[in-house]
Image (tube, rainbow, N blue to C red; front, side, top):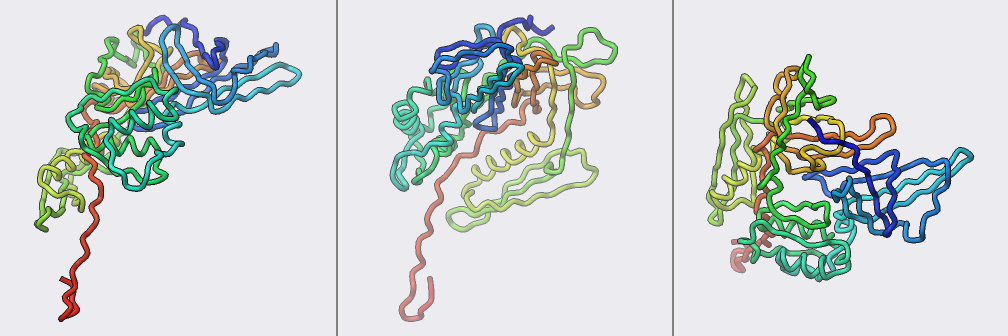
Length: 364
Protein backbone atom coordinates (compact mmCIF):
# COMPACT_ATOMS: atom_id res chain seq x y z
CA UNK A 1 0.00 0.00 0.00
CA UNK A 2 1.02 3.60 -0.51
CA UNK A 3 1.97 5.62 2.55
CA UNK A 4 -0.27 7.86 4.58
CA UNK A 5 -0.57 10.93 2.37
CA UNK A 6 -1.74 13.48 4.96
CA UNK A 7 1.61 15.28 5.18
CA UNK A 8 1.59 19.04 4.70
CA UNK A 9 3.02 20.62 1.57
CA UNK A 10 5.20 23.47 2.79
CA UNK A 11 6.83 26.18 0.68
CA UNK A 12 9.34 28.47 2.38
CA UNK A 13 10.19 31.56 0.33
CA UNK A 14 12.40 34.32 1.66
CA UNK A 15 12.11 32.73 5.13
CA UNK A 16 8.27 32.88 5.05
CA UNK A 17 6.27 29.62 5.09
CA UNK A 18 3.00 29.07 3.21
CA UNK A 19 1.22 25.71 3.54
CA UNK A 20 -2.33 26.32 2.28
CA UNK A 21 -1.79 25.54 -1.40
CA UNK A 22 -4.64 24.55 -3.71
CA UNK A 23 -2.49 23.56 -6.70
CA UNK A 24 1.13 22.54 -7.11
CA UNK A 25 3.38 20.86 -9.65
CA UNK A 26 7.05 19.87 -9.30
CA UNK A 27 8.78 18.22 -12.26
CA UNK A 28 11.99 16.20 -12.20
CA UNK A 29 13.37 14.30 -15.20
CA UNK A 30 16.89 12.81 -15.28
CA UNK A 31 17.65 13.67 -18.90
CA UNK A 32 15.93 17.10 -18.93
CA UNK A 33 17.66 20.02 -17.17
CA UNK A 34 15.92 22.99 -15.56
CA UNK A 35 12.55 21.48 -14.69
CA UNK A 36 9.54 23.67 -13.87
CA UNK A 37 7.63 23.99 -10.60
CA UNK A 38 4.68 26.10 -9.46
CA UNK A 39 2.46 26.62 -6.38
CA UNK A 40 -0.83 28.51 -6.34
CA UNK A 41 -3.71 29.23 -3.97
CA UNK A 42 -6.96 31.14 -3.75
CA UNK A 43 -8.13 32.78 -0.53
CA UNK A 44 -11.29 34.64 0.41
CA UNK A 45 -9.11 36.87 2.56
CA UNK A 46 -6.08 38.77 1.29
CA UNK A 47 -2.64 37.47 2.24
CA UNK A 48 -0.26 40.12 3.56
CA UNK A 49 3.15 38.94 2.40
CA UNK A 50 6.43 40.20 3.84
CA UNK A 51 8.86 42.04 1.56
CA UNK A 52 11.09 38.94 1.46
CA UNK A 53 8.49 37.10 -0.65
CA UNK A 54 9.56 38.22 -4.11
CA UNK A 55 11.11 37.07 -7.37
CA UNK A 56 14.70 35.95 -6.83
CA UNK A 57 14.07 34.82 -3.25
CA UNK A 58 15.36 31.46 -2.06
CA UNK A 59 12.74 28.70 -2.12
CA UNK A 60 12.58 25.38 -0.30
CA UNK A 61 9.66 22.97 -0.61
CA UNK A 62 8.98 20.21 1.90
CA UNK A 63 6.57 17.29 1.96
CA UNK A 64 6.09 16.99 5.68
CA UNK A 65 9.69 17.28 6.90
CA UNK A 66 11.25 15.84 3.73
CA UNK A 67 13.01 18.35 1.49
CA UNK A 68 11.86 17.94 -2.12
CA UNK A 69 13.09 21.16 -3.79
CA UNK A 70 15.70 23.88 -3.29
CA UNK A 71 15.77 26.74 -5.78
CA UNK A 72 14.84 30.40 -6.26
CA UNK A 73 11.57 31.94 -7.44
CA UNK A 74 11.46 33.20 -11.01
CA UNK A 75 8.01 34.76 -10.67
CA UNK A 76 5.62 35.82 -7.92
CA UNK A 77 2.11 36.72 -9.11
CA UNK A 78 -0.68 38.26 -7.01
CA UNK A 79 -4.21 38.95 -8.14
CA UNK A 80 -7.52 39.92 -6.60
CA UNK A 81 -11.15 40.62 -7.42
CA UNK A 82 -14.36 40.93 -5.48
CA UNK A 83 -14.39 37.21 -4.71
CA UNK A 84 -10.94 36.91 -3.18
CA UNK A 85 -7.16 36.82 -3.53
CA UNK A 86 -4.87 34.62 -5.64
CA UNK A 87 -1.16 33.90 -5.33
CA UNK A 88 1.15 31.95 -7.64
CA UNK A 89 4.86 31.32 -7.14
CA UNK A 90 6.78 29.54 -9.89
CA UNK A 91 10.20 28.92 -11.36
CA UNK A 92 12.72 26.32 -12.42
CA UNK A 93 15.14 24.17 -10.50
CA UNK A 94 18.61 25.60 -9.88
CA UNK A 95 19.97 24.23 -13.15
CA UNK A 96 18.08 27.12 -14.73
CA UNK A 97 20.61 29.50 -13.16
CA UNK A 98 23.50 27.49 -14.62
CA UNK A 99 21.85 27.62 -18.05
CA UNK A 100 21.27 31.38 -17.84
CA UNK A 101 24.76 32.37 -16.67
CA UNK A 102 28.05 32.20 -18.60
CA UNK A 103 31.48 30.96 -17.60
CA UNK A 104 33.67 34.07 -17.03
CA UNK A 105 36.82 32.77 -18.71
CA UNK A 106 38.69 33.42 -21.93
CA UNK A 107 38.53 31.66 -25.27
CA UNK A 108 39.58 28.03 -25.43
CA UNK A 109 40.81 27.69 -21.87
CA UNK A 110 41.34 24.09 -20.80
CA UNK A 111 39.70 23.32 -17.47
CA UNK A 112 38.85 20.21 -15.47
CA UNK A 113 35.43 19.34 -14.08
CA UNK A 114 36.50 19.77 -10.45
CA UNK A 115 38.14 23.15 -11.10
CA UNK A 116 35.14 24.35 -13.10
CA UNK A 117 32.58 23.55 -10.38
CA UNK A 118 34.75 24.71 -7.47
CA UNK A 119 35.88 27.99 -9.01
CA UNK A 120 32.90 29.12 -11.05
CA UNK A 121 29.94 27.62 -9.16
CA UNK A 122 30.69 27.01 -5.47
CA UNK A 123 33.15 29.93 -5.19
CA UNK A 124 31.58 32.03 -7.93
CA UNK A 125 28.50 34.21 -8.30
CA UNK A 126 26.15 31.27 -7.66
CA UNK A 127 27.98 29.96 -4.61
CA UNK A 128 25.14 30.92 -2.26
CA UNK A 129 22.70 28.73 -4.21
CA UNK A 130 24.50 25.41 -4.52
CA UNK A 131 25.30 23.28 -1.50
CA UNK A 132 28.00 20.99 -2.83
CA UNK A 133 28.93 18.63 -5.64
CA UNK A 134 29.70 14.93 -5.60
CA UNK A 135 31.56 12.92 -8.23
CA UNK A 136 31.06 9.16 -8.26
CA UNK A 137 34.11 8.31 -10.37
CA UNK A 138 37.11 10.63 -9.99
CA UNK A 139 39.56 8.50 -11.97
CA UNK A 140 39.15 10.81 -14.99
CA UNK A 141 39.32 14.14 -13.18
CA UNK A 142 42.63 15.15 -14.78
CA UNK A 143 40.90 15.24 -18.17
CA UNK A 144 40.11 18.77 -19.35
CA UNK A 145 37.70 20.39 -21.80
CA UNK A 146 37.90 23.66 -23.70
CA UNK A 147 35.43 26.35 -22.64
CA UNK A 148 34.35 28.96 -25.18
CA UNK A 149 33.43 32.62 -24.51
CA UNK A 150 29.77 33.03 -23.64
CA UNK A 151 29.28 29.31 -23.02
CA UNK A 152 26.74 28.67 -20.28
CA UNK A 153 27.89 27.23 -16.99
CA UNK A 154 25.58 24.26 -17.49
CA UNK A 155 26.91 23.43 -20.97
CA UNK A 156 30.46 23.73 -19.67
CA UNK A 157 29.76 21.43 -16.71
CA UNK A 158 28.04 18.86 -18.93
CA UNK A 159 30.96 18.93 -21.37
CA UNK A 160 33.53 18.59 -18.57
CA UNK A 161 31.52 15.70 -17.09
CA UNK A 162 31.35 13.99 -20.48
CA UNK A 163 35.15 14.11 -20.60
CA UNK A 164 34.90 11.77 -17.60
CA UNK A 165 32.06 9.77 -19.18
CA UNK A 166 29.51 10.81 -16.53
CA UNK A 167 26.05 12.40 -16.35
CA UNK A 168 25.08 15.52 -14.35
CA UNK A 169 21.91 16.02 -12.35
CA UNK A 170 20.64 17.98 -9.34
CA UNK A 171 19.52 16.66 -5.95
CA UNK A 172 16.67 18.32 -3.97
CA UNK A 173 19.16 19.79 -1.47
CA UNK A 174 20.97 21.72 -4.27
CA UNK A 175 23.85 19.24 -4.57
CA UNK A 176 25.22 18.77 -8.08
CA UNK A 177 25.71 15.08 -8.78
CA UNK A 178 28.15 13.76 -11.40
CA UNK A 179 28.00 10.06 -12.17
CA UNK A 180 25.45 7.38 -13.02
CA UNK A 181 21.96 8.26 -11.70
CA UNK A 182 21.07 4.55 -11.53
CA UNK A 183 24.35 3.27 -10.03
CA UNK A 184 22.92 2.76 -6.54
CA UNK A 185 19.24 2.85 -7.42
CA UNK A 186 16.76 2.58 -4.57
CA UNK A 187 14.55 -0.48 -5.10
CA UNK A 188 10.94 0.40 -4.25
CA UNK A 189 9.72 -2.23 -1.81
CA UNK A 190 6.05 -1.88 -2.69
CA UNK A 191 5.19 -3.26 -6.13
CA UNK A 192 2.93 -1.11 -8.27
CA UNK A 193 -0.21 -2.95 -9.36
CA UNK A 194 -3.02 -2.37 -11.82
CA UNK A 195 -4.85 -5.68 -11.95
CA UNK A 196 -8.40 -6.30 -13.08
CA UNK A 197 -10.77 -7.41 -10.31
CA UNK A 198 -8.18 -6.75 -7.58
CA UNK A 199 -8.62 -4.77 -4.38
CA UNK A 200 -4.87 -4.22 -3.92
CA UNK A 201 -4.34 -1.84 -6.83
CA UNK A 202 -2.23 1.23 -6.08
CA UNK A 203 -2.01 2.65 -9.63
CA UNK A 204 -4.73 4.96 -10.92
CA UNK A 205 -3.88 4.69 -14.61
CA UNK A 206 -1.04 3.52 -16.83
CA UNK A 207 0.00 3.79 -20.47
CA UNK A 208 2.56 1.52 -22.11
CA UNK A 209 4.31 2.76 -25.27
CA UNK A 210 6.38 0.66 -27.64
CA UNK A 211 7.91 2.56 -30.57
CA UNK A 212 10.66 0.54 -32.27
CA UNK A 213 11.23 2.85 -35.24
CA UNK A 214 14.82 3.40 -34.06
CA UNK A 215 15.52 -0.21 -33.08
CA UNK A 216 17.77 -2.24 -35.42
CA UNK A 217 18.77 -5.88 -35.65
CA UNK A 218 22.31 -4.86 -36.61
CA UNK A 219 24.22 -1.61 -36.11
CA UNK A 220 27.64 -0.85 -37.56
CA UNK A 221 29.95 2.07 -36.94
CA UNK A 222 32.33 3.19 -39.65
CA UNK A 223 35.18 5.54 -38.90
CA UNK A 224 38.93 6.04 -39.24
CA UNK A 225 41.81 5.82 -36.82
CA UNK A 226 44.85 8.09 -36.79
CA UNK A 227 46.40 6.23 -39.70
CA UNK A 228 43.33 6.56 -41.86
CA UNK A 229 42.40 2.89 -41.54
CA UNK A 230 38.74 1.95 -41.43
CA UNK A 231 37.45 0.64 -38.12
CA UNK A 232 34.24 -1.31 -38.13
CA UNK A 233 32.34 -2.17 -34.95
CA UNK A 234 29.02 -3.98 -35.03
CA UNK A 235 26.40 -5.36 -32.72
CA UNK A 236 23.35 -7.54 -33.25
CA UNK A 237 20.08 -7.73 -31.35
CA UNK A 238 16.71 -9.44 -31.49
CA UNK A 239 13.87 -7.13 -32.46
CA UNK A 240 10.09 -7.52 -32.80
CA UNK A 241 10.48 -7.05 -36.56
CA UNK A 242 10.08 -10.08 -38.81
CA UNK A 243 12.79 -8.74 -41.12
CA UNK A 244 16.37 -7.64 -40.52
CA UNK A 245 17.15 -3.94 -40.12
CA UNK A 246 20.72 -2.71 -40.71
CA UNK A 247 21.97 0.70 -39.63
CA UNK A 248 25.44 2.00 -40.59
CA UNK A 249 26.61 5.13 -38.78
CA UNK A 250 29.66 7.13 -39.79
CA UNK A 251 31.42 8.78 -36.82
CA UNK A 252 34.45 10.87 -37.70
CA UNK A 253 35.53 11.44 -34.08
CA UNK A 254 35.84 7.72 -33.31
CA UNK A 255 39.49 6.77 -33.69
CA UNK A 256 39.94 3.39 -32.00
CA UNK A 257 38.16 0.05 -31.88
CA UNK A 258 37.45 0.57 -28.16
CA UNK A 259 35.80 3.92 -28.87
CA UNK A 260 33.72 2.38 -31.66
CA UNK A 261 32.55 -0.43 -29.37
CA UNK A 262 31.58 2.07 -26.66
CA UNK A 263 29.72 4.25 -29.17
CA UNK A 264 27.76 1.37 -30.62
CA UNK A 265 26.72 0.17 -27.16
CA UNK A 266 25.56 3.68 -26.26
CA UNK A 267 23.56 4.05 -29.49
CA UNK A 268 21.81 0.71 -29.01
CA UNK A 269 20.90 1.50 -25.39
CA UNK A 270 19.64 4.99 -26.27
CA UNK A 271 17.44 3.52 -28.98
CA UNK A 272 15.98 1.01 -26.52
CA UNK A 273 15.51 3.74 -23.91
CA UNK A 274 13.30 5.63 -26.35
CA UNK A 275 11.53 2.54 -27.67
CA UNK A 276 10.04 1.10 -24.46
CA UNK A 277 8.36 3.44 -22.00
CA UNK A 278 5.46 3.70 -19.62
CA UNK A 279 3.69 6.39 -17.63
CA UNK A 280 1.79 5.60 -14.45
CA UNK A 281 -0.23 7.78 -12.09
CA UNK A 282 -0.35 6.94 -8.39
CA UNK A 283 -2.21 8.55 -5.52
CA UNK A 284 -0.10 10.64 -3.16
CA UNK A 285 3.44 11.90 -3.25
CA UNK A 286 5.28 9.12 -1.45
CA UNK A 287 5.88 5.39 -1.22
CA UNK A 288 7.93 3.39 1.31
CA UNK A 289 7.78 6.54 3.48
CA UNK A 290 9.82 8.46 0.87
CA UNK A 291 8.72 11.16 -1.55
CA UNK A 292 8.86 9.85 -5.11
CA UNK A 293 12.21 10.53 -6.77
CA UNK A 294 14.00 9.85 -10.04
CA UNK A 295 16.73 7.22 -10.25
CA UNK A 296 14.64 4.55 -8.50
CA UNK A 297 13.84 1.02 -9.63
CA UNK A 298 10.41 -0.57 -9.22
CA UNK A 299 8.36 -3.57 -10.28
CA UNK A 300 5.02 -3.07 -12.05
CA UNK A 301 2.38 -5.80 -12.29
CA UNK A 302 -0.70 -5.79 -14.50
CA UNK A 303 -2.95 -8.18 -16.39
CA UNK A 304 -4.46 -5.40 -18.48
CA UNK A 305 -1.45 -4.18 -20.50
CA UNK A 306 0.14 -7.13 -22.26
CA UNK A 307 3.83 -6.14 -22.08
CA UNK A 308 3.91 -3.72 -19.15
CA UNK A 309 4.62 -6.20 -16.35
CA UNK A 310 8.35 -5.67 -15.89
CA UNK A 311 11.11 -4.04 -13.89
CA UNK A 312 11.15 -0.30 -14.57
CA UNK A 313 13.44 2.66 -13.84
CA UNK A 314 12.00 6.01 -12.76
CA UNK A 315 13.31 8.44 -15.38
CA UNK A 316 10.98 11.26 -14.34
CA UNK A 317 8.28 12.15 -11.87
CA UNK A 318 5.82 15.00 -11.45
CA UNK A 319 4.31 15.73 -8.05
CA UNK A 320 0.84 17.22 -8.61
CA UNK A 321 -1.69 18.80 -6.26
CA UNK A 322 -5.16 19.95 -7.30
CA UNK A 323 -8.46 20.65 -5.62
CA UNK A 324 -10.20 17.97 -7.68
CA UNK A 325 -7.67 15.11 -7.43
CA UNK A 326 -5.67 15.90 -4.31
CA UNK A 327 -2.05 14.70 -4.32
CA UNK A 328 -0.96 12.54 -7.26
CA UNK A 329 2.37 11.54 -8.79
CA UNK A 330 2.92 10.92 -12.49
CA UNK A 331 5.83 8.55 -13.12
CA UNK A 332 7.81 8.46 -16.37
CA UNK A 333 9.27 4.95 -16.60
CA UNK A 334 11.81 3.27 -18.83
CA UNK A 335 13.09 -0.29 -18.76
CA UNK A 336 15.77 -1.09 -16.21
CA UNK A 337 19.17 -1.48 -17.84
CA UNK A 338 18.50 0.72 -20.88
CA UNK A 339 20.20 3.82 -19.45
CA UNK A 340 23.73 4.41 -20.81
CA UNK A 341 26.31 6.89 -19.57
CA UNK A 342 27.55 9.62 -21.94
CA UNK A 343 30.38 8.82 -24.33
CA UNK A 344 33.76 10.29 -23.44
CA UNK A 345 33.80 13.77 -24.95
CA UNK A 346 36.83 14.84 -26.98
CA UNK A 347 37.56 18.41 -28.03
CA UNK A 348 37.58 18.69 -31.84
CA UNK A 349 41.12 18.59 -33.12
CA UNK A 350 42.10 21.32 -35.57
CA UNK A 351 43.24 19.91 -38.89
CA UNK A 352 46.85 20.61 -39.84
CA UNK A 353 47.19 22.69 -43.01
CA UNK A 354 48.44 20.72 -45.98
CA UNK A 355 51.85 21.64 -47.33
CA UNK A 356 52.09 23.03 -50.84
CA UNK A 357 54.76 21.83 -53.19
CA UNK A 358 56.17 25.07 -54.64
CA UNK A 359 57.47 23.33 -57.76
CA UNK A 360 54.28 21.47 -58.65
CA UNK A 361 51.82 23.84 -56.99
CA UNK A 362 50.02 20.81 -55.58
CA UNK A 363 48.91 20.12 -52.02
CA UNK A 364 50.58 17.20 -50.30
